[in-house]
Image (tube, rainbow, N blue to C red; front, side, top):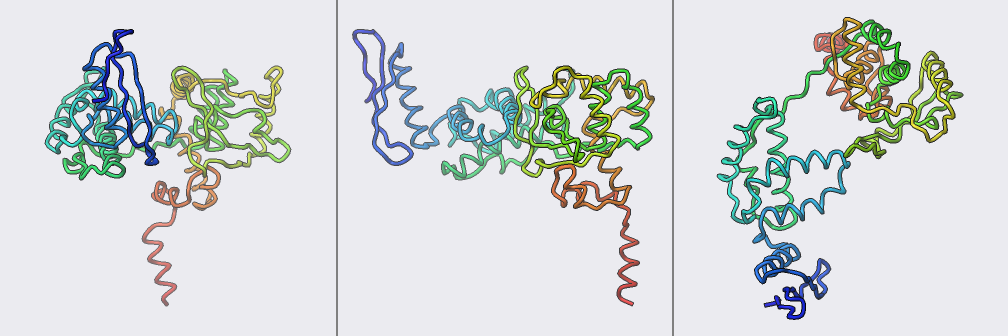
Length: 356
């Protein structure tokens, strides 16, 4: 036993020898436990974690999972994952040992989650249910891949919910022009939406733009970062994907508009954000402008879809569009296939001519 009593302090401490992840023998001392039981529980948890033993509880393994995964995704993404883990998964599984969790336990958990309701009294959507299940499955997959868990009980149980892509909405150019006129009374809103629509930016990319990102001489704007609000603070992060780093050529009218906008900002430095707004403000302006313009309300991200739709209607191909909006060309082809003018019938007709 490696648990001892400190007679002087009247507390308990742990002194344990173990092999670290490099196989080296080392010693760990942890002091200040009020009871022998607390010290023993800590010792067992420590040994389980460092030995990778799946005798540990689900809650203990989740701490390992967090440490291994949280630095591999964007902070805003991790916050979403952690919220699901803390509120939807841990309350049910935390005390169970990893090796004892069966697919029947997962099915019982699924039934419980599917019966829950949100703050509006509605059952969770099928898409959200699938997201919750996928997170549980990811934890077990981590245990299978790195800690020799024989099988993933969430995979055996099967998924709940289903994936359903959000409906892609678009504005025509005329609809956007009506909207832009309706928000012109607030210049910062007008210029922000001009950049979103005519450049196809993501909202985070827009909010991260600084004065130094603009090269008016060459009519270019550089996209190399994103703005995320985390715990009430705006954080500048890397863009969504490596492909998102790009330079976008602006039309002449947009160059002139942005120069006019810059002229209204006092003492503007190259590292200053030109749109120091938050997503809530932008969503409210989207609602206000849509209502005043008499056009259907679409999501802000749908402005990006609208930009792609405009370019397709203008005759540009998937590769050129992908470079502009920071996507892979195959993604453009897949996601917007129904918008490209070439139909199956036209393909067949051209193949017939080719064969003749």
